[in-house]
Image (cartoon, rainbow, N blue to C red; front, top):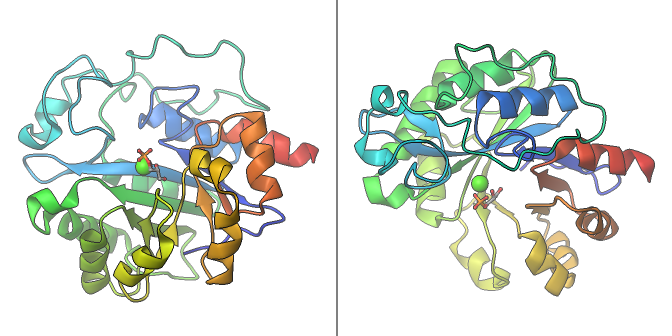
Length: 275
Ligand code: G3P
Ligand code: CA
């Protein structure tokens, strides 16, 4: 996995800048790029007709005006729904130095975001961009999610690290099976098995060769801060989610993590600058 240094951890936008815009929308990612995030995190799921879309939940009920499972709908069917207007708690004041200059035009606002579109956004960002792509519930569909992911990444030449490419992709999953499949399909692609329980010794036993470990969540780190040192001793970088509050930022910086995954990248960047 790519490593931000403990002196200046990399800052990733969790589901885009999802504190200020509905998660996984084009606006959320455009803002994250504008805010200076080092990278973008997204979850992906497969539609009935084989498109990867950036959505966290198995159903669209929470994050749209539609209902039902993602996996039984086509992309065209999902595209009828509004994924942007469900947030009623958007903050009034911005985090840090933000402009809304590059937000999506009306044609795209609130539409379901495909991974394809997110990849082109990252390629067009005009600066190095790191993408953390997390596959959700991959084992339910055989190898369809991983196959679709690698096919898409190949189209962009992003299925393996390339020093000439400004976009660097890491595939992540809580499922060892999914990580193993991706290692077979694209051996050069960095892969990360996510952990959110403190059982690293046994997890390392499941770790597909060549992949890294990512995690844990900040609440686990608060309860067991020694995790960072133990992971570092074993040679693993530590990327922590979802770090949004000042005390959480201070904690993970003190613990010298390598990456901070946050809904509020501008806020984190500003706080890192002040230190
Ligand atoms: O970056 C990993 C983190 O996003 C995992 O949790 O539920 O937000 O996908 P979740
Ligand atoms: Ca995720």
